[in-house]
Length: 119
Image 1 (cartoon, one colour):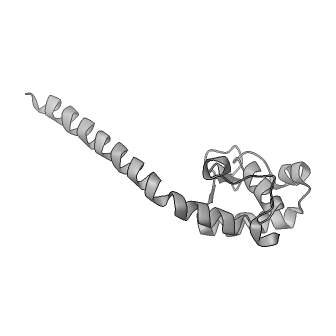
Image 2 (spheres, one colour):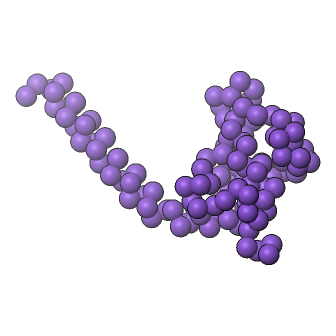
Image 3 (cartoon, one colour):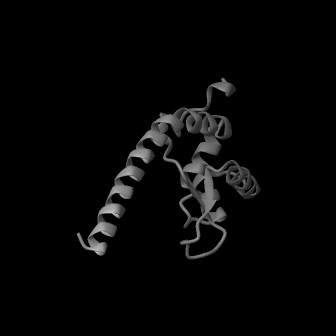
C-alpha cells in the first residue's frame, strides 16, 4: 500500500471512531442537557425567547415576536451563553447575535407549556 492510501485509510478509521464516540456521547449527555434546559428555561417566555435565538434575529425582532422586554432577552441570553446552551453566532451577518444550541423538541420540552416549577 502506498503511504497516501494508508493515510486515507487511517483518516477513514478515525472518522468512523469519532462518529461512534459522538453517538455514545449524545446518549449519555441527553439527560444532563435536558435538565439544564428545563432549569434555565423554566417559563413559557424564556422558552419562546430561546427558541427564537437563531443567530439572525435581533433582540428587537425577538421582542416583537414574543412580547418579552428587550432587557430580559439580553440578560437571559448572557446567562444562557454562560451555561453553554446558546452561543454568539460567528456566521451571523451582525456580530453578537446569539444562536440556540439545542432543539427543545428533541428533549421533550414544549415551548407552549410553562415548566412544572411554576405550577
